[in-house]
Image 1 (tube, rainbow, N blue to C red):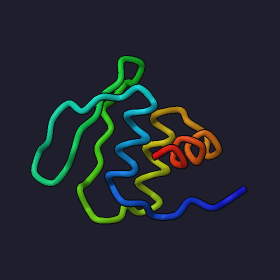
Image 2 (image 1 turned 90 degrees about the horizontal axis):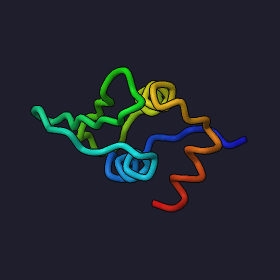
Image 3 (image 1 turned 45 degrees about the horizontal axis):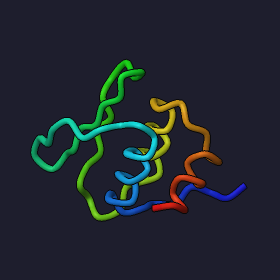
Image 4 (image 1 turned 90 degrees about the vertical axis):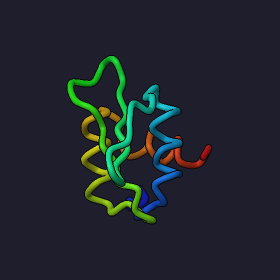
Length: 76
């Protein structure tokens, strides 16, 4: 099992889009994504690299395992 590492926000955005989310709006330097099955929106900052804790929190909200995330990330 490989560790999660910081990734550029555009690569993480690609993972979100492949998992069925859509871009809803942008407020300041934060981008907000939604999906019908989610209870709350996903918020990612437009920082160059997203810290691991932000990636992990968003994966929990999405209900995606680490392995699924890494598979989606390879396609981006």
